[in-house]
Image 1 (tube, rainbow, N blue to C red):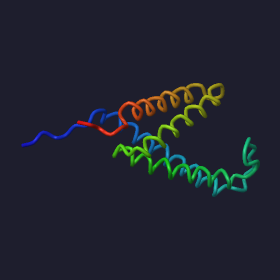
Image 2: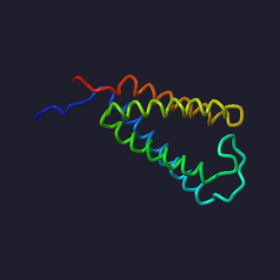
Image 3: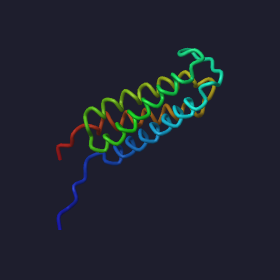
Image 4: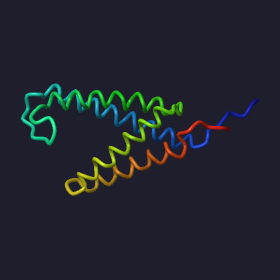
Length: 128
């Protein structure tokens, strides 16, 4: 009976993939909600009073993040790169909310940093 091949950092990669898939699905839900409620008044920095534009943006980003999350399990180089960029942008975005939602923002920043750590350290092709 042969020993199963255990890839280095498999737990970290699984964590990163699951978090990315979850974040992507949440973005998809947010996008669908925005498309459904596009007549609601909104005041934002970008896309002034255009909830439909935000809906399409979150829907497209969510689909990309879900696909990248599944591809991270295979340690695909493009998925690792896209996922690190998404995690970096997520951490930076949450820094803007730290004074309004301090606990949630800090927790999300820590999770995004952990995802970046997992992908940068263990996301490459395994030589074992």
